[in-house]
Length: 69
Image 1: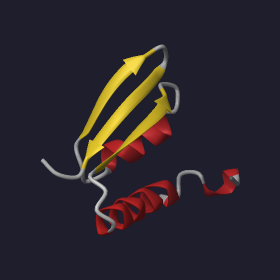
Image 2: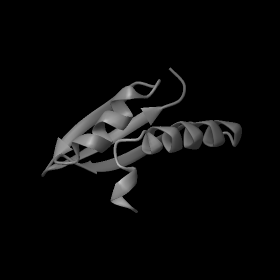
Image 3: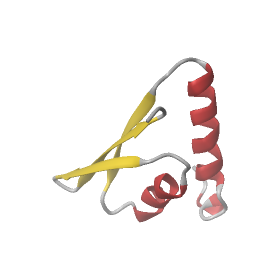
């Protein structure tokens, strides 16, 4: 991906779109693995509208994002 787009909110836009499309298809949530050093991607998940559960193991965050409480 081009570095010129970093910091412009594209990841957040795509994340919200992915959630919307998943919900429309009956998906109940996501899991994601993010390197602990990838602060920008962690901020995308933190800024989202859904609660995120995180577990850190060996420098990788395992995230769980549930669509339903």
